Image (cartoon, rainbow, N blue to C red):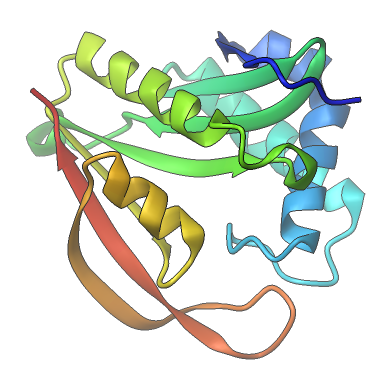
Length: 179
């Protein structure tokens, strides 16, 4: 059940993510099945969605170079974004935004914007002055990022495969300078 109130946006550590692993897997699975271009292609079983969080994100969180924010609607995971700060010494001024996703049945409530604001605030706290990301060219996420102040650095053609077909889609590389 989804409420109409704003969800709670909080950071999760590796242990907290592990405790909600099934919900994270289910959300990722739902987003990919809804057509999200976030790195996965069909067939994409729920077990692979859960394994992504367990095998890739939990270790990254334990390493302290990634921050995971979650949107909770009550106790239900409805969205997430990550801030990756595992950069080379000459890039310690920037962070990468990745895997912004909101459950398909919870969209159009401002959750993605709230998640991005939390990630930006954390980047500022860490002294980061530049954020980067990429998104499938033409997706609604590209519009969202633009409204949040991100600028387009360029477009890379045939960057990633569509989740449902052999079609290759372009990606738009974006950045935002933080005051």
